[in-house]
Image (cartoon, rainbow, N blue to C red; front, side, top):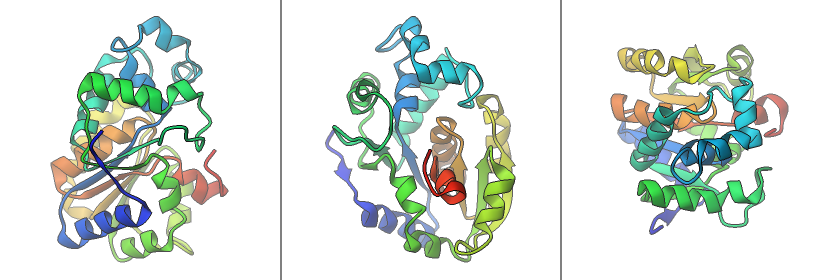
Length: 236
């Protein structure tokens, strides 16, 4: 990949500039879940995919999607092709607990298959860092925030208080890929009510964040496990 790799300050600079200039920016991330979704019938057979522990959990209703789902696969790949900044796991990274073969090696294979070549990349766990960096929260001060997640009440209650003080103007519950179209419809219809959108919706957040930035011209962030850091002090 000939992308420019951004450290945390570089990511924050990009976010800040987009907020100030009121232009679209999507920050999305690729972990084991995204890799598995994109590997369906491209680099693995459906049988191989469904044997993975992550896929088994997904089909028990724990990941906000069910497999196989080739439409989801293609939408995730398309959003990764278009997103402003894509978080990927560095080679040999141990931040997430997935088996090694589900991490960067699989990202490289599915990116090659789909021709995904992000101009800007950063660490896939950037969201966990963002949640702990005061500059990120200061940047959002005074901005109207849209929150989209499964753990709506808890997260909203935490983010409006110390030390975050976010102005959350709307919050949408999002549990499953089936809600994608109606959620994007709401996001587009109500685009004049918010400045920035935070998505904690697993793999679905890749599509939601990229589409939101493209359709509304806003800053949209795949916030992932950052909600766990805010609520529990740890990512898992």
